[in-house]
Length: 533
Image (cartoon, rainbow, N blue to C red; front, side, top):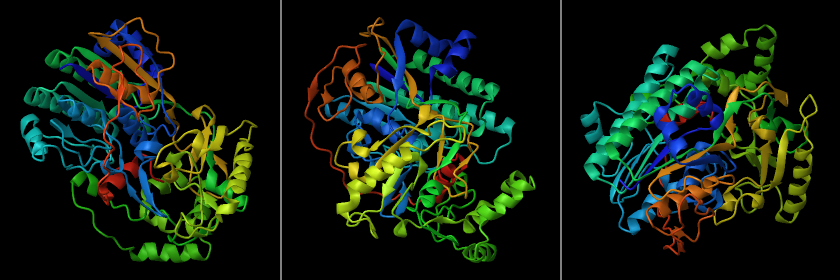
């Protein structure tokens, strides 16, 4: 193997350094110590489904088309998949130059496109993903004794740690099996549990250590078995504790007169169709109708008895956490007051997008803002959002700007109109309506902007400075380690750890047909992790 790329979701020095100091991660530490390393600035938005495609295509979301976990068609949505990534991946560019690849667990790679080599998809794929070659999943499961994309749901703490280790081992064993079988020039293995653990067990240092030790063990075995000439470690973003507030953007926009609401489960998007344990059982998704209780709650919501009002009463009685644990989520959602997208002027449709969308005539199905008023309205909203302060007087946002400041490319029109970057990523944004603009962060740990990059091995300049490394730089840098020119459409540049192989013009990407995910099992898992509200 010429080049191995190890992806560590949410990897950052604030997590790694204490483990390095304790000599808990000898294999990862050896890469950092023997090569060049530094912080890797993520993009906006710094979340898995958009950031990993940016890392492995080298372009911003305006060029590859993925801005979050959801792809919107008007006011409707679907979970993103590989058919939404509309730019060549680095392994597809390598394929054009005659290099083979094995890719294991890379997010947003389902359904995979054919290359010389193998692709075993990761995050946002269903539990039984299509692979390349198509019989690959059965072969992997037969060879290593089972393989899963996700852990079972609602595990007790001791079992969740066991499953973190098991999933990590599956990634390593699957990668080594496929590397031995296909003998690739390039390998990419991604570990997702390093992010998941912070969403499911925030601040639990013992569980975090257990996950990272499991990853390090697999890294060591992969290095021994595959003996790559060059090793690169990269993450999509960082992770850290949030000490600020939860800011409910749509509550703010409602009070300012921009958001209209609807009751009884009629707003969009509605997560009330998310179904039970289907994801982990590997069952096909199916349409689902509201039960009698949900219909009753929806009717109650229409006359003002919403889950938000019920929640406020329960909070005063200190029963809110108990109810949240024991009342089915579908019941709560059926009674929720929601944003009425089609009748609103502007709204946050998905917190992961980090911004506000204007309901524009001619672009959105039931747009209410005339095109000639768009610029003035956007400037007005930018000014108001930039002026928002927390209850203790600090700015909620460090940047509020037009989308052009962050995105360019043929898919920029799919982005939010106004990008809102939380101050130091210490304020938690929410699209939910809660009748109050501020509250405690729903997740005490979440994403930060700086990840990690390290490179070691043949042809790597261990003394190279990496102070300004960016997520977009990873793809051209990986290509350079194999002597392959970067695409002239890439936004990133080859990092100084390796000599650039230049640029060339590659054929325009053929987007082909968009494939619907339409899989409630995937939606369930994303909702469990707090990505879907």
